[in-house]
Amino acid sequence: MITTVFFFAMMAISTVSQADELETQESLSQAVTAFLKPKLDALNASRIDIDIGSVDPRLRLKKCTVPHELEQLGNKGLSGKVNIRVRCPTASWGIFVPVDIRIFEPVVVSRATLPRGSVISRHLLTLREVESSSLNYSYFRDIDQVAGTEATKPIQANSVIFTNMVQAADAVRKGDEVIIKAQVGPLFVRIKGLALQDGAIGEQIQVRNIQSRRIIRATVTGPGNVLVPM
Image (cartoon, rainbow, N blue to C red):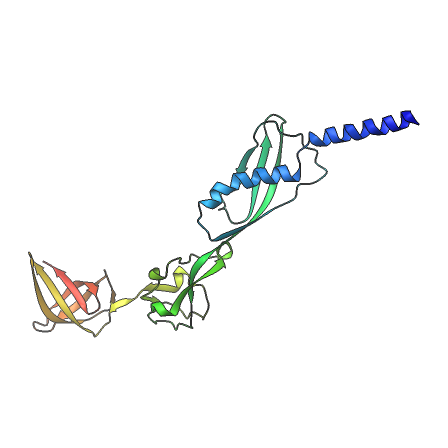
């Protein structure tokens, strides 16, 4: 009886000893988390959820006595489903750990339905936290980037505004009366003109000098204002 008890006690000690020498799901998850944390912190997101996949429990990986070597596979950004390779140089093993990364941050959203061609006022916009890692197009993080732009397509209320939905709004419309400014040294000459084209700030358009009827090219500098360099 004593011999049998001694045998099972030795087996238990041996099992514990072997388990202590193996990697665990917790140790591998800690290594992956430590690898990803500084990269994810640099994104300055408001919230990030990380789901680290389980390692096959049938794998008996010898515990690494030196820091693990980790790298992200592929050129994919740090969002969605990514694969992290974990290697132990001393124990000569390597595995792939799947990770699902969900990034949340405030992005610009419409408060109301915006018709195509409408100039978007600031009060029609708000910031809302969404899962940006699931968005398929470029978006805006700052309301000032969207306020004053023109909708290139209808935008539904409570929709994320993507960069392909807006463009710089025309400060001058075809047929508008404009003030043509011509700079001569430190002096500015102002004359009335008629816009022959639409134009956003910074764009060149054709305008007609109402007095001389001459058509010239001028740069739009603001609503109802164009500049002719001399």
